Image 1 (spheres, helix red, strand yellow):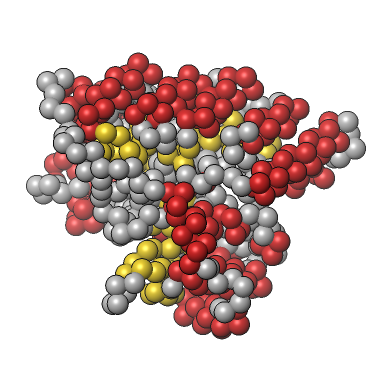
Image 2: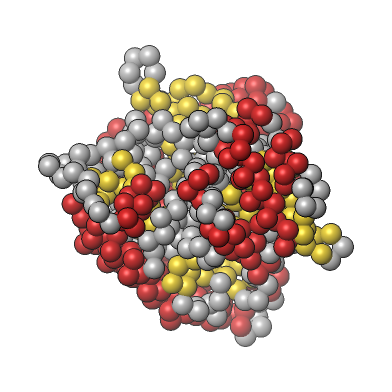
Length: 545
């Protein structure tokens, strides 16, 4: 992973000192809340329903053991003993005292972490495939490119106050695990006819109130031109993006208004002016950044262990992923215990993951867009020891990618923007699916839940999405079907009227049972749904309504 240089350390420390002064002035009344708001947002501090919330940046989701231990200590010393991993691969603390936040930022800085650009109308945390550098289907590691974009965008004066928040993802594998088509900019690493590696560029995706899939505006971009082309896109957006209407401010609305072809034309026109400027990426700088992301060496003769333990075998089937290096595997650490809060992790669990990463994982762990963790590099000979460590920490749930691996935003339990609760609905669905014995039977199904239209839980791109809405002071939940996050991305469609919260789990179980009844052999839920359409599922969802 990338290591800070002296400039990185200085910039972060100066920002903390500046924010410490701002906090002091807010507490003694020299700053009003309205004056303080833009200052705290630039440092990842939100005002939620009950308390301030701090969102910590985890660039491209990558952490080492020292960072994990500090995250655990912050949870214990400054919060209520836990943190919450988000779909942007960041971690949130829901209960810090405002007076403590500068001290928290100091502790983060000591292990090369911060909370900059986790909020506000700027370029947010750049994400990539959580298995980058390890995936068996990878063309090229996306992390160096995510780091280059991070360094270019942090404190970029031209893009500090965009019309709206801005999200970029990079994917280097054949399967899209970064969700390129639901990002403002998606970058897919590809090879051209000459065998050279470059970027396919997608623009204008996003979720929220008006979900849209991105459009491909360039088939191949040379690596040297990455920053100049991104600059051109952002300049077109900065010039024409709506600043008079919060709901029409995202780049997806601009791309739709202009049309993808016209947006691409304007981008190319702007790019022609700056292509050969000082934004050209030197080959030596690309090589320097890449050097921070070397893959572990091959481990000869290290086969996946045979086992007579049913629990370990089940965990291997669900939570292990193939690695591109012989003798290694990647493993998913589920943060979705049955009936638990998706994405939550305790202080002691963070420390347990730190220990496992240090002992068995080449000192690296990742946060994922579906609110889990990954140990990307584990020797096959160590898999059972890792499993035993996860069992001891309460982190060995073998449900990665199953229907109980539910993604959910914090919802009305925490968020000031929410209309409805998400966490209790997720817990009830998980419990009922487990009680009915459906999880293994239905296999790969994504269920994602949101408490408001901002869609931080990504319900639009779930096979089964749940959106909480407020109707005259009561919480109701719309069900969407047919969304998908990956290469064949799709936006789910609302299937009917909203359901009361207590009716949602049974409705989803009926939909899953319908799938079992009508699927073809080896057909996934999403494949069956696309083959037969939503009507059969709609009938079962509303059968008891």
